[in-house]
Amino acid sequence: MTAPAGQWLDPVCAIARRAADAILAIYAQDFEVVCKDDDSPVTAADLAAQRVIQEGLQALAPGIPVISEEALAAPWAERRTWRRHWLVDPLDGTREFVKRNGEFTVNISLVEDHRSVLGVVLAPVTGDLYAAAAGEGAWRQRTPEADRERIGTRRADGLLMVTGSRSYGTGRTMALLDRLGEHRTFSLGSSLKFCVLARGDADIYLRLGATSEWDTAAAQCVLEEAGGAVLDLAGRPFRYNTRDSLINPEFIACGDTSIDWAARLVDPEEGA
Image 1: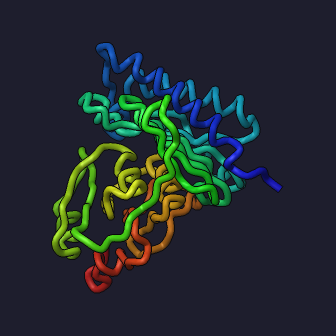
Image 2: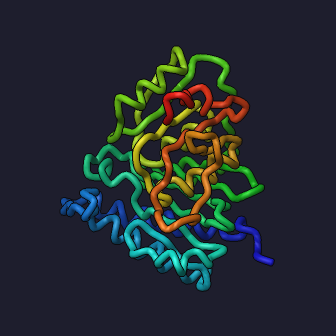
Image 3: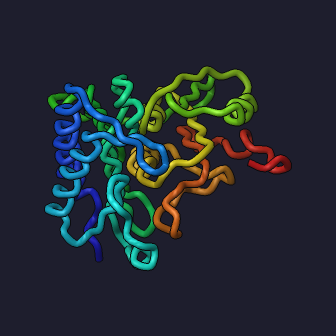
């Protein structure tokens, strides 16, 4: 029998804060931006945070493997045998880091039996931290010195607040969102979009196009424990490490799970 994920929540929060310190040390200087093979940017801050998190998780739980954006993933033949693994994005929102707008995060998740059962999302610039473990609810700590606050999603019974990407967006996204009727939109970078849903300040985030498993796992746990959900466009909950590819399907993140968002947004006759 495996131990509950919640035993690691406080240590993982501490690891995330150490990674944030490493990021901010580079954020305060001039830094070089290199493009990876997929044209996504990477900086010394991504790599510094990766080292801190990798070392911290290996010391915390030596037997649990790590998948990270900044490290080569194990082959599927090996991964398919895993029951537990860490899923890490050491600096989610590198484009926002490069723009110096502060909207980037450290994401650390524990995946067990294909579900995210522990999630920590930390915004280094503000110190705002969101964390959750399966069955234990979600909380927010606005600064390292602040008290922890329980957070929860809200009912979508008024003007809908829709959040979306600061750096990505398509006409197709707008066309589907128009199906919701009157709504207001605002943009945020990184996993902070999930966090505003989790704390009850927005209702829905629709993401079309590619994301990776490390982009969503930590924030999904926070959102689910706050009362929300992350669903594919057919309305099925997200699961992790179920196939060779680490690319997610397109998704809907929502706060109010009593609404069939997939039915409202996607016409099955037209397809997703």
